[in-house]
Image (cartoon, rainbow over all chains, first blue to last red):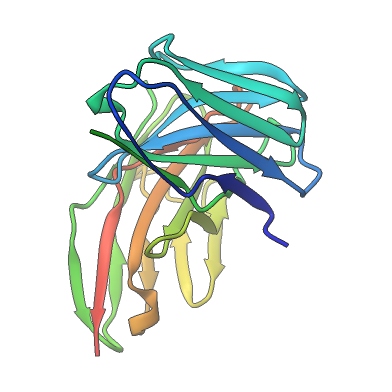
Length: 113
Length: 113
């Protein structure tokens, strides 16, 4: 009964490939996020959706495209992968967009060779 | 701009030692402040929070007091356990703003038996 679940947990791929990471939350939350954690554990927000509407879009290469088919799902598609994209990507959700109480998934470790 | 500064890690302590992890912030207005914890191989979990000056957040023996005069939110625990070994993140969210949680760089705590 994982509250925020991401797949896959590990992803190893070659430069130039396209890959997707999926996220689902069963908490009934309205808001979902993607964060990127680099090798030094620094966390940076990438995107946030509230009820399927994009509300935060940080300075991220346009190779990254989020999609929210419904408010329980937020997927991340990455085109033309580069070495620097190697990181752990965390999905998170919150009750609404006015709280700092986020619930995180376990992360998806992406390694680009 | 809004930012969070945490003490550099790693912090290495013996079991039952006293813990302090320093956190200071820069923000316009009156932000809400949070401590999140990330155990090895897991996503972040909210540890405690404080939403206004002089509030004290507490959970699992950890405490932090929102100090407006020193713009600080230091994390303390009187007696750490091996199971407290994790990375601790201080974070802020500016009230009323589009929900963007800004994290510090994280502090690794290693508790030795």
